[in-house]
Length: 293
Ligand SMILES: [Zn+2]
Image (cartoon, rainbow, N blue to C red; front, top):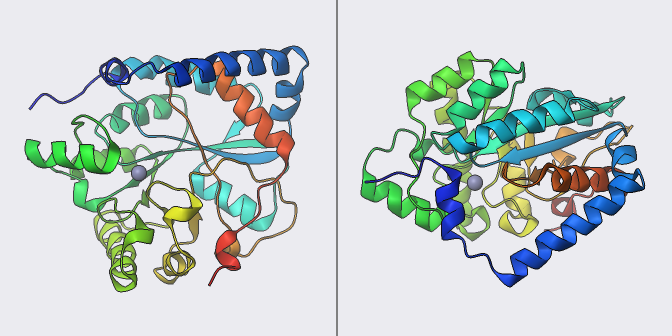
């Protein structure tokens, strides 16, 4: 089994569709305009907590990770996921903060964790216990294709997970084996969420935070949202864009964390544009699960 070790191998496989090229060109224009008018810089300097996440940090993405952190550190303080959650819950948001996380537990997350550790940053890694330590090539290939639409990428094993924790990073729950929570029968979903947290606690001593697979509002139900807290988690994160700038407290089980997904290979100017835009759009406090049945 040949595992993917570089992002270039994935990029090669993705067709450069006219749509993607147009989007790229549009973002070049928008980000340039917002840079020249000072709009992006103005947004980046606003007090807020911005959660930012990746899926992979392949060997050919590590320099971009370093550049991203160094660039954003000019205007932001990087804080652990837990601290970001607490600040939003307490409405204690007095400066621009960034919390980094990474989903899915690929082996290359360890390299990213080492780079971040060197830079003095603690990130949160959301993992699926059923995928940790997978060795069988055919199973990995099937999982990567089914769940992640990726060619085979190796997953972290238990020792590597321990190493990440020893560096001072956090580990969060990302469900048992990366099913779409909203597609599971209620009992199975509740059991999946509880089993994930219990297993991570038995391995590592704690698992406070949850991020559900795929991360769009429609990928979790209101009952699923309640099950996340009933299982003992203190926060639930999405993959919906936005940042948090509330100055009043929000109850832990009323808060829905927004996170912006990025690929390290993206131009830094585009990432800065997205984050500046989030900030100027204001605090993303709406929680659709509170009003849904
Ligand atoms: Zn995921």
